Length: 207
Ligand code: CTP
Ligand code: MG
Image (cartoon, rainbow, N blue to C red; front, side, top):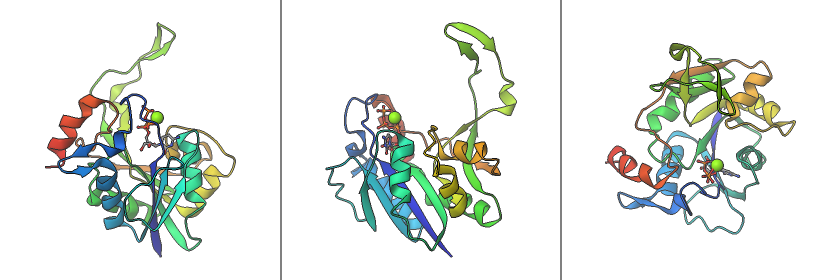
């Protein structure tokens, strides 16, 4: 039984305004924090980078990504060994994810789920809109905000990506096929490095 991670780091960082994964947070680059947490929890790590990037981190395999996040995950998936039975997908842009969160999602898949994802309660009221017109207001108590790492049975993740679908997370592709996706408690400090004003909070989380 082996668990491999795909760490996706091939985005353009447009909202950040540049190569955000090179941002130094408490002395180490965001990319290093993310890869190290994945290494601590998994048997092997495939890193997906923009083609031509030299990541400067120690990983088992490093492959070029694609135009969308889903394309990049598929590029990583192609480099995962056949004997991996659990695959964890992690955004390099979440440097504050703890190894214990990886352990929790992996354990839920080993217990039988097709996929396991970290979720945190939503604190804002969320509305569905059509342009600038509100269509409806979903009950907030039934909503969660979802993070990575997300763990998958290897067969479920490979099947979900077989038809080259696109989604903002991989669990959505598993859901579309009727797979059983379970939620484990996420970590409020596991925020995504999206814009420059995320840096200060991430440095606090990584202290
Ligand atoms: N990602 C990727 N390949 C892509 C797009 C995104 O590997 N084609 C990765 C990013 O590097 C990041 C994660 O997916 O680790 C989540 O994406 P996001 O936070 O949106 O990062 P970017 O796409 O880089 O940022 P932006 O959308 O602002 O350009
Ligand atoms: Mg993006």
